Length: 93
Image (cartoon, rainbow, N blue to C red):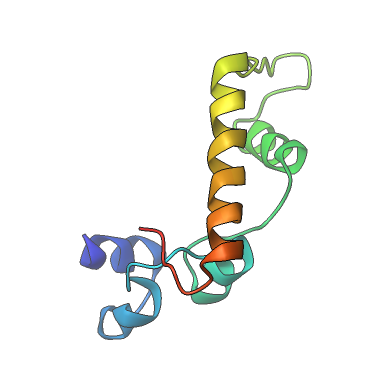
């Protein structure tokens, strides 16, 4: 898997411990090690995708997130933050 990631992202496989060490990256950390190209908000990501797909603003139709899924994502993020606050040395995998 790490070899595939290295090849796809143009990373050096020998330096895989930098980007494949089983810890959670922030968006900026992931960008710094080469795992992502850009860090943006949802609007920016959608706009970039629309341009790459060569769609006009009228042609781009976005589905809305399910309310339950949105709730679960928020619950997971809040739980992770709370765990990190009380147990900063805990690494979530």
